[in-house]
Length: 280
Image (cartoon, rainbow, N blue to C red; front, side):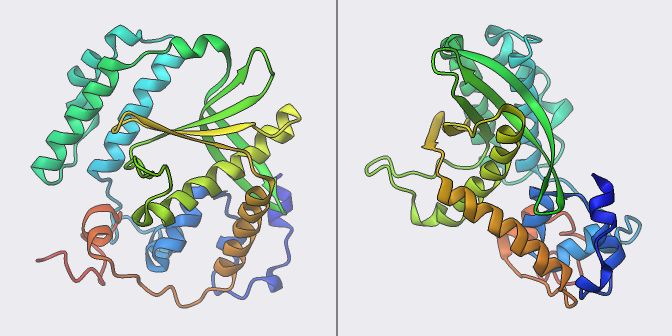
């Protein structure tokens, strides 16, 4: 598959870093890094000099990764549901090193511990577990794409596939109307694009598209479930191709300044020259 990317004509890429971009394997996080801040993308994937620009994790990502790790153990039968809450508490400090506002940390810790304490997997008996943290490697419109599906299951009665994604993000729907909250519209569209790209893998390997896409918002103890939509799938594929074309033709890599992102989430928040908030 690598030859497909390597053999692309460089003259199709109007970018000073054509060779680097030409050899890239694309992931959703790599694409959204560019969409979030082009300068962040430049530092991470073009400059890639950790002595000058040391990438850092953050509290939110570490908690999310830790919960993913525990759920992976559960679905792989390496950890019982009954022991999950105590495991979360006992091994928290070994997995989460960054901090943020104390009230946020306390609330997050409590909500995740409660999630595991209340967790019931009786529903899984209806399904065959097809994959847990299943790695995917596919080609989309000539570009190599990689990622991981958190949980892929198949209904034993209908043979329908379901993609389940574990999310640390806030539950995006209104409890009153069931509609996406205005503040969550942009992030929810991003969640859908990622899952629809993963749907291509399911179709290529199992012969059908998933019937449902589910997000497990574990901190809120809520799920969001949507049916597969072919129009939205097509839009996700178009977005994927379009943003790579943007990267191929980018030469400026201008910064995007956002207080919360720059101070809490950006991997280069303490080394980026443009973070005007880092010393405040």
